[in-house]
Image (cartoon, rainbow, N blue to C red; front, side):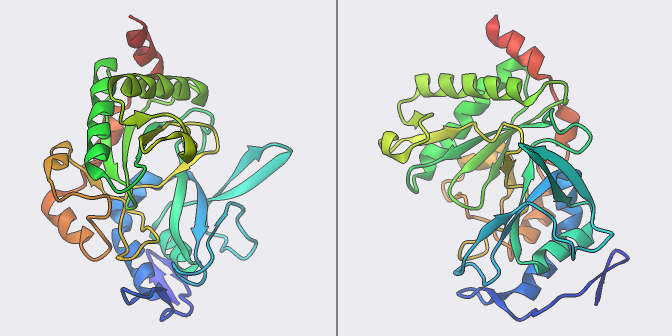
Length: 295
């Protein structure tokens, strides 16, 4: 048993290779989530989690698991979430031990809701996902900047993050006064304006209809949908990490979505801090933004 903030977690099969081409084991992954917990927890606390699990590492089968199994420890926080025909008991990540336990459970990436327990119907985040057709990251950066240009005049404060995969997320903190439907409507309108202004972008979700264009994906802004949270690992070679950025970093020609990984992100945090550390202070009203859009 190992102690994580006063809670005991038994790390099993710690030498199991999770990232075989990088020599990263399950024990390494548990250590990463323990070490990053103080920075990551404010971004994930109180949010229902969908666990993306890779029991045999990134080359093996993966699947999402929502329901918390009976063998989870009693100290692991959960929340009952309604679904059609019943309910699901989701995990919530509240403390260092929770992150360590999920990593030992082969959950490489805990995907989280855009709302928090106590107000699950009302999001505190709006997220636009810049999803490229290929590896053209110049277009990804241009799309993120275009999204910010649409959001700021609405009185919204956009933040940007690499996904650790291929794209960028542009995220706005919300004051939890509006339901998901209103957030999605506003996100759709912003995306439509982006598409009107640049023929490299589309809102067509089918790859067959995208014709090589970047998808401005707004459909995470709905009840029960999830997004990759800041500082989560991704199941790709190199163990990339979803990493919040300062906006001026988009000017770096060497920036890619997988620029930062579990071995380099701590040096970055020491040098530049967490660009999203003050995100809660900028929570805004969807209703006010919609009013500004109509003027």
